[in-house]
Length: 302
Image (cartoon, rainbow, N blue to C red):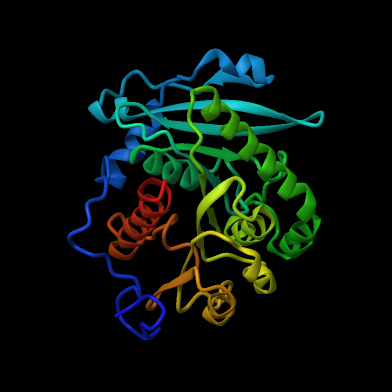
């Protein structure tokens, strides 16, 4: 059964993978990655000095010794954008680097939240160079804030300001790769708030920076711009997610034949990057679907 014709009521994800298609393996289990995350080492080329980017080494817990620590290097950096500074994390694959960049857009809790950095680390373990920018310029939502203020905080996030930070980050990683003689298109992934921005950015980009996108349960989605998206777009949500209803995603797939939707039964918001159980089969399958989508769109097609 094809992607577009699969029923939404199926108990498994709509998108099923061809078993005979070779794709890169996941580098480590989620549990191992959570441990390894604490011992990320600093590594990146000194070309950054030419690009007016400041760097600082992320903290390293030397008491943790794990072979998987060699898989990914992590750097905390800043990107200059017309006089403003965008903090970011960069995770780069070491042994199996495929020369492809991924922009990862966070949920409302920001680029430094452990759920986001853990996910970015795991994506990088599959060979990518993952840049996670601060979309909120130091003002991400905090869990200790009154919930009644959330809508007011969201309204403060200027779409043009957020888009500028995203495109500045895309230019930065594109320039870094170009300096190494690599001209691959970037991938873009987003969760929740960031998932909605994936759609906005791809509609504005029109196949300049990005070659493929994945939106996890996006919020604040404007489906009217979907026809402007010129690259493959994967939409993942749960059928019990009130913040990202399937009807909104269906509008996108109707407007754009390159957009495909995956719906998990009986799952709510944020189940992939914030699973409620140590071992979550749905979260794991969603990750594999995303990984294969990016592989096909960025590596097979290049």
